[in-house]
Amino acid sequence: MRAPIALVVVAALPALAATEEELWADAKQVTAAFEKRTGVPMVWLDGDPAKGQPVGDGIVAFPPTALDAAQSTPALVNELSIYPEAFLKRSGLLKIVVARGLERDGRAWGGFAFWGGAKKGTLFVGLRDLAHAAKVIHHEIFHLTQHTKAVEAKQQAWRGCNPEGFVYAAEGEVDRTRARVATITPYARTNLDEDQAETFAWAVVDQPFLELQSKQDAAIDCKARLVRQLVKLVDSSFDDERWARFALRRPGDPLP
Image: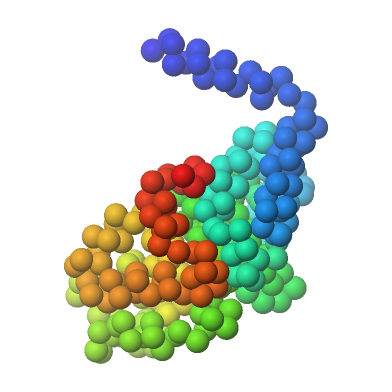
């Protein structure tokens, strides 16, 4: 057991030896390259890392430390690099604000996007537990694309995937006799917007799970195929070859 522990200590030494200014400089170098590639600025929430800040709709954000930023920003940028070069800008994303962690109504949260108001187009993301947060981040990014004309025009096609008699929770009583009926998660039954965002997020982070559910449910299969068409309408580079590469990566890794 001693060797692995020693490796961890040695790996941590460069970070411990770096000054706070050097750590921020390393992180800013990564975000500058991201902004140059995508046209979307990425900034860190400013303030005391120990104190949460209300940022809207029950969301509290905690500022990152220099070490948080230096160690976790590369993985976050890798996660967002799965998108075609111009996709994020075309989706309506104007700015990314990075926090050490986010909470919504007292629960840990991975990300939150503002669709309107003074913060319109702003995506808040948390560095904590990126493997879990990745699904939430992609879910929120898809919410932004729903306000593009291309995706708005396909709402009726999405409804056409649902079986006869299906309703979302926002529209009436949901059939709860099965664990999953026409939607990839129970949360996706909330309304059409959440259904689309959940389908997209799972398609990005766990294709095997989505494919398994698609084989068992014709509605999910229809939506899995349609969500690929929707993002391709936003950016034609979001093609089958890119989807195939998603299956080869883990959250936080660059696109192969």
